[in-house]
Image (cartoon, rainbow, N blue to C red):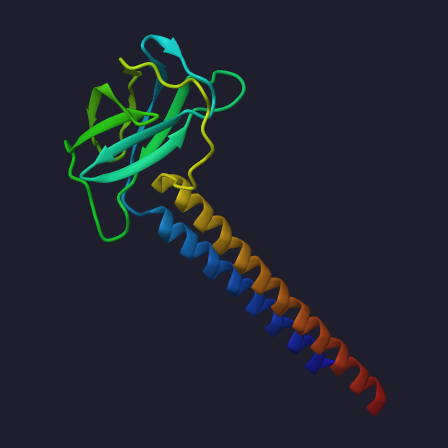
Length: 180
């Protein structure tokens, strides 16, 4: 019986260590360079736009995309600019915006950790149709999906290890029972 308890403790310790490792990795990734978030209303020639309208931010040649929400309050946007790994944007770097490919008259500057309210308008009337999601996401969305996948993989590995040690425990119990 002592051996079975020991195996169970080792298995439980390994499972907890795996979970702690995955959570620590996710936390370290979350502490990467802070982004600059922009929110506000979106209009074209003074008119509201439908949900699904693409909003683009351009900084140092990098493009970040989001879409206006479908449903209630469709003429709004929220977009976070976070530099890709290995790059950084200096505070004060100019940011230009587009609505469905049309340049807006508004610009902003990147401020790490900033949260800026900026209403966007383009003088050209957008087509008014909502476009399908292009598959390109802003840095914040990409990070969120990466974190979810990493945590899911960690939970899966932890579950497999736990199941493995439960099976080992059963095998050892049967052997001990057979030897007594």
